Image (cartoon, rainbow, N blue to C red; front, side, top):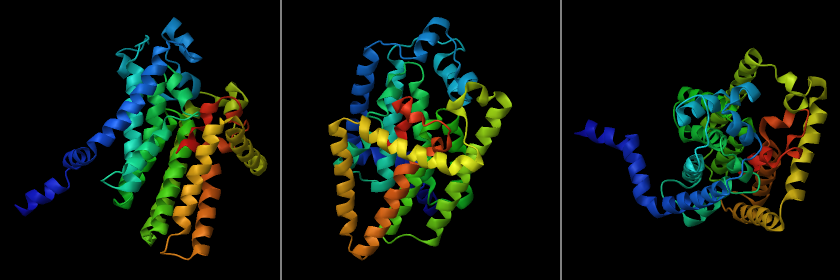
Length: 340
């Protein structure tokens, strides 16, 4: 009987059922909000950039263009063949579901099993913001881009699991992210730093947490290096010009500084006033919450918060920070890391 109870308590299906029962209206809210946005964009019936070529020829081209084998294979499964046809609102609905799951997992990581209305409302910014809306606009690509965002969040459900399990899942999810949409690479970094920051502020940080942060960094680098080798074996990125070229080691410092400046300034300059207001409001709420944390001195709170923001804002650009071109200048979707 004891063994049976232990099995039930650790059963994933049971845990999900309990989570749904406790938060059903909040889950409904997040799902509906995403579906309203995604379906409305889909109803415009506007073929966006690569969509035109795929509508005319049925070509997938995900792997051949940017070595996105995850998108390539997933598109075959969704389509039922290797020849793509416009599936109407199907891809938009699928994108909305994936983004809803991503937001709910994000809430669970930082709030726990019982979500708050404030957390679920804030979480939809992950997929509904000026930088991510362009992703939803793709009629063929959007579900796989959304998968890259989900893959960047899922590993941290295993933060408290055994180190080997956590490392392997991080590594595999980074590979999935890179093989679906590399611009999501900054989301992984933001979540890792935020998990550590949360534990420090709650006075729960231990040596194990620092070890897991280190492990996540190693898994992240290992996953991207594997993807880089995979890409080199399959196609020559250099043939695609500056947009896929990585800075030389002797120029890396200057390139990183330039990319950070361009990234932050572009987000500020190209955001509507309402979004600028929201940025300020979010940071202000964070400052007030952390500054008056009684578990630590105000000086300590200020230093930790300053260090956190100094790292998380520029690093949300992800691996694109070392590219020769400041890609966010080309198109806003390369800035989706800031949404996390």
